[in-house]
Length: 329
Image (cartoon, rainbow, N blue to C red):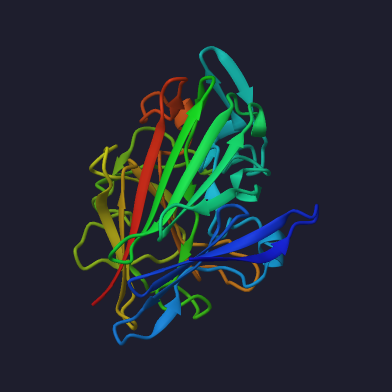
């Protein structure tokens, strides 16, 4: 494990990069935005490549903020419809940064904050910060930690915890874009995907869920086939995981790329996974060059009492864990 200066923000704040290595996998993490800058893994022939879209210099992350490359997302990942919600009878107005909605915590979400980073054992990093009450117009002072670890088998685990001093809503995720042929190799639309998901949440023209979750059977949202199928384009949807909310991370799917044989597996405690095929990627990456698999609660849950709750109250602890595994076939 090692740390190095990666750059400085316009206000002079230093950004450091940490490197983790284990079982043939190398992951690099930035103190800015909790960004997973790169993940290097071997293909079926032992050739190593970075499978996460990212930038070699800090300027890329500062210039191309819209895609949220590799970032830790909060206070509320995904969209909150109308950029408002009511909690315990109090209405909260949020920043509108996605049409009429609030996306990923607003313009100044956790992806644009400096996180305190320190080693947590030989193969893990603990990222922490305090999100003050009113940050992004969300209630409650939130004490946050995120442990990024390379496990014994080389899988990358992301474990989040948070406590609050007042009722609030919390939904955290990682926004890495995966290209298993290698970052910069071109489109990822030929990747194949399998999910343990029998339903998804239909959305309106603003990508806000409407109605109850719908069955995937007979639709382009059915990724249950063991052989997978091309992810194609035009996906930015929440898939309802059959397992629901779980105390331990449960495997919910995998994505693979045929030319290299690389396989990405996903296990999570979360009840949903947002599949985004990167149709609005910016900078050196073209639309479709990476696929984001964002484990999280459903979009607009604060306004949907029929969805699994994202409310966190004093005395409770928010916990979430996702594990990305790497293999070949």
